[in-house]
Image 1 (tube, rainbow, N blue to C red):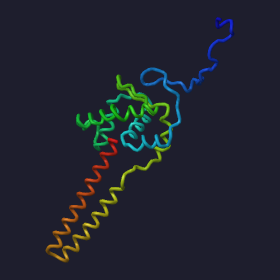
Image 2 (tube, rainbow, N blue to C red; image 1 turned 135 degrees about the horizontal axis):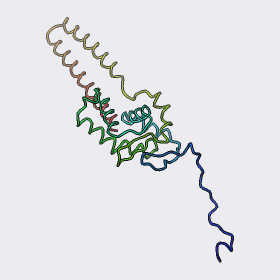
Image 3 (cartoon, rainbow, N blue to C red; image 1 turned 45 degrees about the horizontal axis):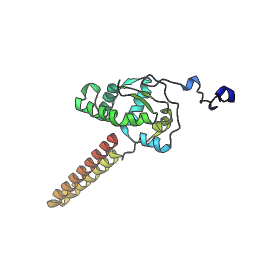
Image 4 (cartoon, rainbow, N blue to C red; image 1 turned 90 degrees about the horizontal axis):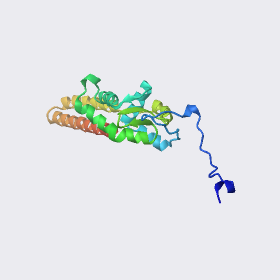
Amino acid sequence: MSTQETGSTGPTTKPIEESPTESTTDAEGGEESPATELSLDLIFEILKNERRREVIRYLREHEQQVTLSDLAEHIAALENDTDIASITSSQRKRVYVGLYQCHLPKMADMGIVQFNQNRGIVSLGQNAPQLYEYLDNQSPKTRPWHRYYLGLSGGGGALFLISLLMGGMASVVALGVFCLAIGGFSALHAIEADAGRDE
């Protein structure tokens, strides 16, 4: 029996209609997926990494598609506390590879950015605005190193004065303790900074 004879016209489920304002074009020129609600775990997973935070800040500031090269140069300059003209090729490459292989694909999977790997083009995704509130109010998850070093300097000065009064071997011991403390804090600071960038 034909379809016309039974009156069946196939599935009756209608596709979800999207308003024109919800439909946008992604970085590859196709139709971008509609926004989906991200869990707090996913939001914090993205924002805990310094490079990913800088990606969102840079894209918000430019409000348009940017090249991966420009994005990598900007972040490399920030990480090395210099300007774009002064960064080395190895500094630029390290950030570029990290963004290309790890951070941008992860952010694209969550709809936070649109990333065209072939063309090297990046733009904000539909889910990006969900992170703005936390990004703007976020306190860096790093230790207050300036306070540690200030306290260490004060303690070292006190040790030095005491050792001068006592004289002899006490000066050598105090200097050794102070140098070990400075070295330990510096190593811990460097490890934490690298982990925040590469995570």
